[in-house]
Amino acid sequence: MNAYDFDNTIFRGDSTARFLAFCARRYPRVWRHAPAILGAGALFLLGKVEKTAFKQKMFEFLQDVPDVEAAVSAFWQKNARRVRAWYQAQRREDDVIVSASPEFLLAPIAAQLGARLIASRVDPFTGQYDGENCHGAEKVRRFQAEFGGARPDAFYSDSLSDAPMARLATRAYLVRGERVLPWPEPR
Image 1 (tube, rainbow, N blue to C red):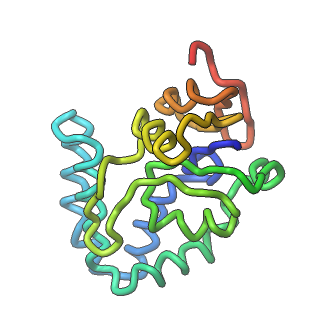
Image 2 (cartoon, rainbow, N blue to C red; image 1 turned 60 degrees about the vertical axis):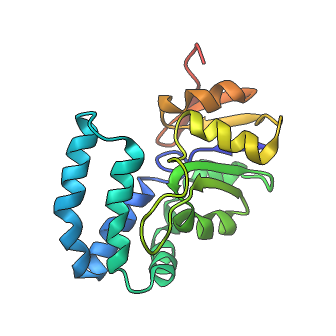
């Protein structure tokens, strides 16, 4: 099996940021969360709060989305075309997407691509996390919980913060736009 990060790897852009912007355009009440999101973002950048706490505060905007499932569906109708061509050309039925983005957001596109999904568990109504943000070493922990001792044949990511998954895989690749490069050593 091959494992892939999602945002800026097989998807052009950050799906969570794009979904937030999509919802803000459709549901103006989402804008009332902007000060809290910006404040939490500043605290995260200053190292005062963990990434999960920041993202949980950000996802509170979901409380002002009247039908999250319908919003997610409409989002993917518009954004599925952003899946990169190089991935479409090589995808396999045993692919696994391992992402920090929320499961509720990525589940429809993962199903459309025929890939299994490991992602952050976020309540789509409250924005509350169930567990940790699926990032860095947490990706490895979640992958191993799902697949036991299996290792990906290859892992693809745009971010060096995914080095723990790169070390787990037999081969690893760094994605820069449409270019897929060998993972920089050491993994």
